[in-house]
Amino acid sequence: MKKTLIIGATPNADRYAYRAAHMLKAKGHAIVNIGIKQGEVAGVKIEKPSTPYKDIDTITLYIGPNIQSEYYDYILETKPKRVIFNPGTENVEFEKMLDLPFFC
Image (cartoon, rainbow, N blue to C red):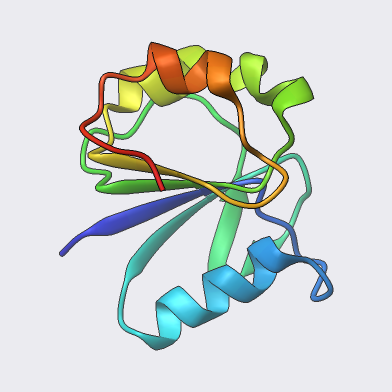
């Protein structure tokens, strides 16, 4: 099963990361929530970034480019098949660092 890692996960129901987690789970996708907030989203605990996962298909970003550099190594070591830069997260510098066939 393809697993999606959500960076910027939050228990705040007003945030898009929260909505995305619930939609992915409702469609049967496995998710990993990474964020600075404590709690859970869609029944999955929000974790702090530590040891990178090795079974991630997609990383979807919900953090702005101003703090993404803190996650560069973590994301690169995770080796996802794709990275989704959601609106407001676009980052040309980081896109160049990723060795992926395409970006979303």
